[in-house]
Length: 264
Image (cartoon, rainbow, N blue to C red; front, side, top):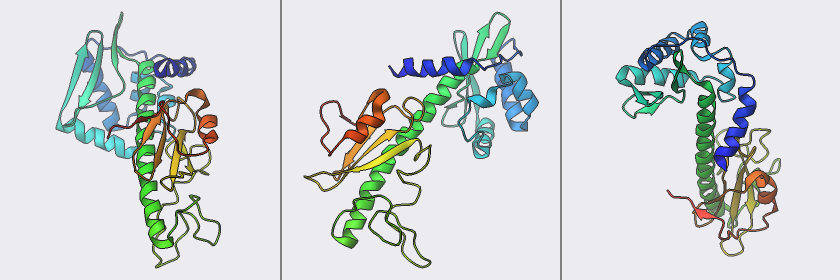
C-alpha cells in the first residue's frame, strides 16, 4: 500500500520532469561527473546531469550546505559505484551511505534517473520524519515526568496559556530554568507540524498521560501514526488517508490489535 501511494505521488511529480540528456559509457563515469559537479557546486553541470527540474525533487528546504560538505568529506574517505544489472548507485564514506539518485542503463548509455530518485528521496524523508516523531514522543514522556516533579500533577496541554505555566512549554525569562519541553514541539506549528507530524495529548485513566502523533500529510510527510503513554513504549499503526480524522477521534489511550510496538 505504501509503495502504491508513493508511486501515485511520483506520477504527479514526473509530469513536470525534463529528462537529463547526458549519457555515459559506464556508471562510474556518471557518478564521478556528479561528484565533481557537487564538489564544485556547478549549477550548469547539475542541470546537464540531472535535468533542468532536479531541484523540484529535493525536500522543501532544498540543498543543505552541511549535507553537501558531508558528502564531499565522505567521498574523499572512500567511494565506489555498486552495479546491479542495469542499475548502479554511488556509495561513499565509512558508513557506506548510498546516494539516492540511481544511474540506469538506457539504449544511449548510462544516465541518472530522477524519477526513481524522487521516490527514494520521499521514502527517506518519510523515514526521517517518523523517527523524529518517535523521539518526540519519548521527549514528551520525559517532559511530563519533569512537570509532575514540579507540580505534582501532569500537564493537560503542550503550550502554556499566555503568562502561565500550565503546559509543558512556556517562554523562560532570562536566568529562569527552561520549560520541560521546547517551543518547536507544538501541535499548533503551521502547515508542516513538527518534522511533518502533529501531536495531541490523550487521557490515560490508568497511567496518567498519553499522546498520539499522526502525519500532517499522509504519504508525503509520514505514513505511520504513533501512540505512547507513561510506560514510554511507542506503538504504531497505518491509519491510511484518514490518519488525521482517526487520530483526532481517539478519546483515550487504548491501543487495540491494530497497534504494534515499535522495535527499538
